[in-house]
Length: 300
Ligand code: PAF
Figure 1 (cartoon, rainbow, N blue to C red):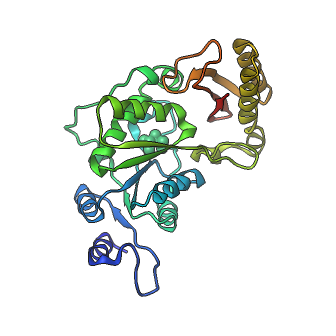
Figure 2 (cartoon, helix red, strand yellow; figure 1 turned 180 degrees about the vertical axis):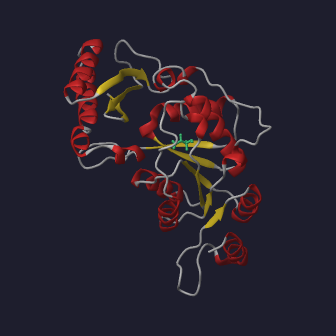
Figure 3 (cartoon, rainbow, N blue to C red; figure 1 turned 45 degrees about the vertical axis):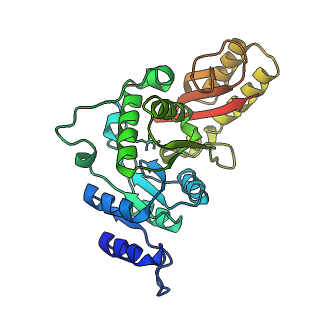
């Protein structure tokens, strides 16, 4: 259905449902800021799920969680160039607009915002958000500029969508803390809602990049979650933290991964903890073949 037809139907009070029995839902797809503004007028308060597409069950859980709060859900799909480093996988990041739109419609999304690069980064734009604190270490250190790119695009999306609440997956634990910091520091009128990680049956955290794992790599990948859960138990049981983290890195290497970091950190500030003190999170990143895996678990 075209954007205008969906908007018209919504304005006529069909409330997201077509009454001819052909199409149980109507989802507006906005590709320009003008379309987005018209759709936002029509919808009232919304919950918001920002994504870079290549959607999996983790994203759909974000939509379901947002929907359960009782407001219409707006999602965005934008592969944000500014959060990729020059040697990272921006060009080959998976893109599947048609499949993504079908999934979002089936999940009951009311609006999808599909901006082009020009809408997000007009040639005269001159503002970038830089975040210290929770953005400085771990992903921030390994991927310089990454969190500045994330914060800038998320702030723009918040300004465009003006959601009441925004839903982020805990797989990117550090990202959730960085966005929460930004929202508090800039007094942005949005509630950040973290949503627990969705995992495969063998423990691997769902990620759009998992599709790049070869068959042997896919078999090895759950070793990351296994190492984290084992190490979290050791630390909670009082084992020395540095030694437990060292053993975790060794077990990742044995599984064929190149660990970047395995760290016990304060759950919100992301400062490293030398000994266990709540609230703590065990976070890790490791390269398996060409794929960078991220995961984290609570401790204690
Ligand atoms: O988590 C992601 O998919 C991205 O970092 C986000 C939040 C959509 C910003 O581009």
